[in-house]
Length: 243
Ligand SMILES: Nc1ncnc2c1ncn2[C@@H]1O[C@H](COP(=O)(O)OP(=O)(O)OP(=O)(O)O)[C@@H](O)[C@H]1O
Image 1 (cartoon, rainbow, N blue to C red):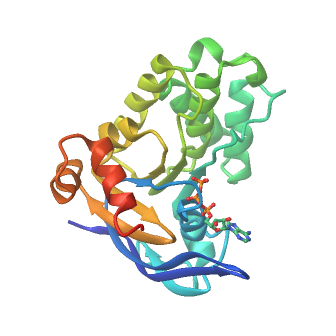
Image 2 (cartoon, helix red, strand yellow):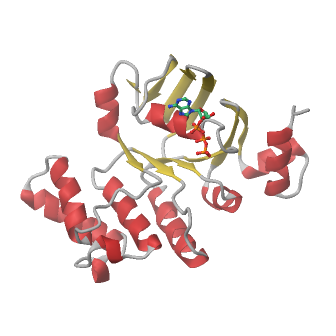
């Protein structure tokens, strides 16, 4: 299987804190990886380094062969980030938000319209296209935010807590959207919802104190922990080694 992301001894040291500590990990093309861990485990710092928001203090990572240290501009062309805080402009309509972002990527007028139409169709946004985005529900705002992240056809997509605060139905709908993206895009997702990681991911990476504590499929992690439910396995793996 083709490698999409190769993380090599990646570290981030803040003045008083080793936020990410010597992480190595390989992600295959089209894989969906869920990053789990308690607050402060280092998930956001890891994603920020991979998406070239923060530079590492040690190690490197290659995204489709491009180095986040030596070629951040090249890496940025391959990726998109859908942050925790939705990045939509509240006073613009759904269509205007998508067109604005496509414009920022420098596409010509015809391409902007084509791409916007495609996203509106793919995310079933047609009934809302003329609505100001501040009037959308949380679920639809999140969908729009992911549609905006996808307008540049990224090879790698980072989703930071994509369903935070959504109700069960909105969450399920978003899961269906993410499930479909898996066919074409490598996805790294952070979440605190264990059932989300369980239902969506090909593999799960559990972080603690800046390191990867365990990784594998849900079945592998349950076996490793000797537990029958994923929640019990997660708790055991996170607590393992604590006093
Ligand atoms: N700019 C910064 N300066 C100093 N310390 C930082 C900075 N950013 C993060 N940290 C520290 O690094 C550690 C890892 O933080 P990070 O945000 O990556 O964790 P996280 O796993 O994403 O947590 P959460 O689930 O709460 O979002 C934490 O102890 C945090 O306080």
